[in-house]
Image (cartoon, rainbow, N blue to C red; front, side, top):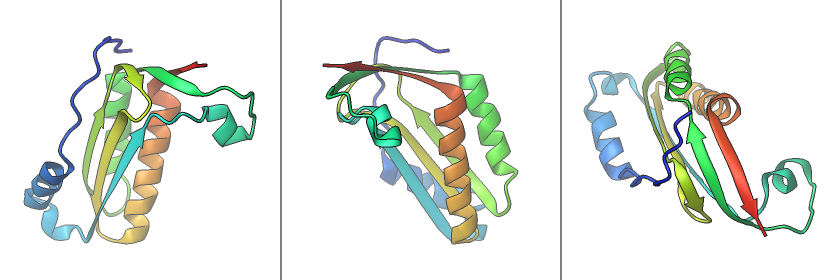
Length: 136
């Protein structure tokens, strides 16, 4: 796991889209979807499982395994109709409102692109990252 203490500068979504539309496979893509995950003050257990202990997230320590992320990206490219994938992950100590990740998926039709985005973000969150919430 990468464990830098310094968060990174987020990418420009406009630049990402320009790059994607200039890519050699752009003519085959009819849709691009972008996911931007951010640190929220509501704890994961409350949002996902309805467990409200009264705490509030004040920050998060975030790290990721780059090799695992690369593997999941490769698997995403194997999905039907997917022609473009780009991922940026932050790292280190993050605060509420900070960007955790950006993901861009380009593909032929909406169902394929939505499925790929769901797959990729889910795999990254469940298999590639460590998120340690700090609460008050």
